[in-house]
Image 1 (cartoon, helix red, strand yellow):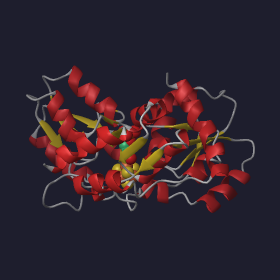
Image 2: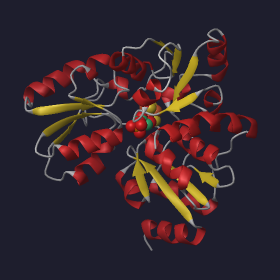
Image 3: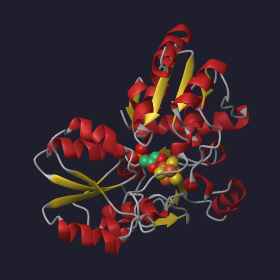
Image 4: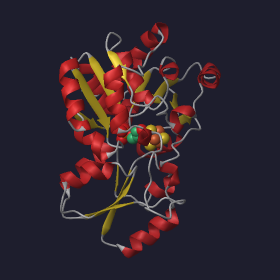
Length: 308
Ligand code: 13P
Ligand code: SF4
């Protein structure tokens, strides 16, 4: 039996569901029951009746699934699948920051640890960030953490002042503006689309800015166009399947002289073999302290309610 067949068989036997982010490798995306962005994955995790959730993504995503499903087994193929953005917001420093601004509502991007979510009023993702900010009365000051680039984008779109945490994603900050403009000169007919974790100078060049699902939907609406895609290169797999005849060009990263695209090393530590192993062994499992879990559940549920 091939590895893929073995995973499918085991999945049936154990009543497991495989949830995968768009940044996972194509073989993992192909075996998944659902491939989506951070919001879609949280929604699927909230509604699944599987006994085991295999989360093919990074730690904070699997942790969110566990917070929503404390009674279920949640496994991650490789526990070292972290996130530079989540790491840029240590709980002790964030606690001090929040304590200095007691009048502020705290909105955090889902790319953060359970401890940070436990200090949050409402969670958001790149799909619903504008809506979530709009749900807070205009006269209420807001702390936004941890992604300063998404925060700046929200400020620009809403005209609201946000108190930003100084965090970022190394993958989206790797895009090189000079190389991007050069590429655009070579393909003047291409439309630039970008993820809001990218820096302001990259976003300024983009015709469309949105989450990974948002970008795929945009391309599907305009299949006759040609696109330069500024987000992690894993998205190109599903995107190209949706628009097989459309030319998709990955935006170039500064340090990249080989494949001219940006890859998340954290997402890519997961492999099909590790996915099989974690389902077979039911390990490594994600566990969240019950006190933290109860507090972190509240802002995640608020987000899911507002995203219906
Ligand atoms: P979305 O899945 O919300 O588009 O975010 C991308 C990302 O960086 C996930 O880590
Ligand atoms: Fe984190 Fe960036 Fe990787 Fe997403 S792409 S998991 S934000 S490091």
